[in-house]
Length: 503
Image (cartoon, rainbow, N blue to C red; front, side):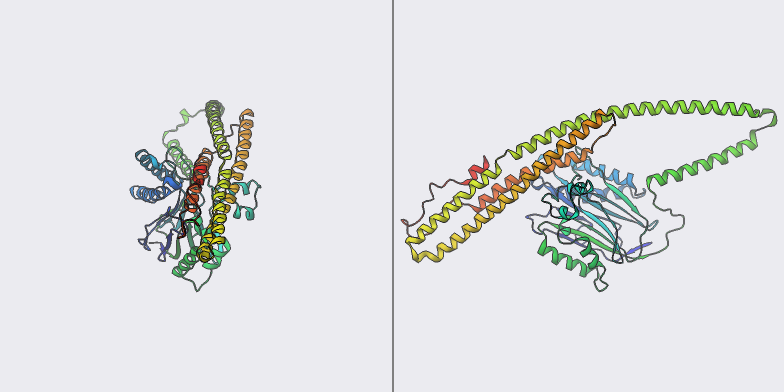
């Protein structure tokens, strides 16, 4: 076996969330040094069962690899595995409609023993690193809104790191109704000592690139120690689930005789063309020796004439084919542009609905009963000094609840401001698309982006439900806590703020 690895280590932790939507392959506790395929996925969708999406991806990608084990693992292979997984996910949604809206990120590493290379693929903002001697040789580029804004020059790297919507992704596996695309890279430079890390964004909440490199460049730290340190730090700092696979190449032996390097699609086309040209030359040369006779030879002028006539006919056919394809492409692009303009209009309606939902006003109203309860308890204290300890405890608890509602208000303001910014972004996309179509440039926008941003808007709307549940826990209807009925505050007239929120 040409590629030898040390025993891989992993994390798959719930972290600060109420459930774990991350999944890894090989499953927890099953990885060995013979493993060649690794996946780490971060489910998204909240109530739509993101954990189901990530688990299905970690089941069906390996299933496809196993069923097609003799095939070359290249970009086309990864795309076929992705389509297979999307099909299975759509079947699941059809059987369980409550799962509609679930999605997941993907990171994938495949070690190729035939030529000592690595194939990696990713979708979303989970990340893959190749690290050697304290340097990052490769890191995947996040499919996220903030990364797109950084590339456009609208955000700096520092602003992106703290942006309230830094977790909004532009690509995810979500089924056949929203087909996506994986970025695929073949790494030919693999050496002993190299680390490969696949991780979700929960790890990246606690570790920036420099911290990761520092940890893995410490010669006194083995894989288990590195895993333990990452676990300890993420436990303290991450509010999300956090999962990863970390492996290190221990040795590479010579690739088997006759093996070939992994080629990108353009390289492969060039090699095939060179082979075809070589075969044609050999065939033509043989035919000339066995068939050609002096009496049958055309004179030099005739051969030139026939050559130019043939060339003219070939170019004419080629030009006609290009014209037809261009016309078809133009029609398809225009249809796509019309569909995407319709999608943009729907997304703008959703954004407008969130902006006009009255969520902030409802939260501010929800705060008032807490303040009223504080006032009532302080009034009871004035008439019953003996209850001071119990009443102080209750008042402090209410004040903490009031502060928590203030925090909800602050976070909601940030989110709704982002929705307004996002609506402006949609306007600019629509204008750009309309101008491109008018200029007949056949420009289209990635349908994945619109579908995933629509999913993120749904997620923002879902936050309203979470706020309602949070306030419900914070502000129960007050019950009498004092033995003195006459001194107890009367809670029977207190209207629950949840009614206001649910409106």
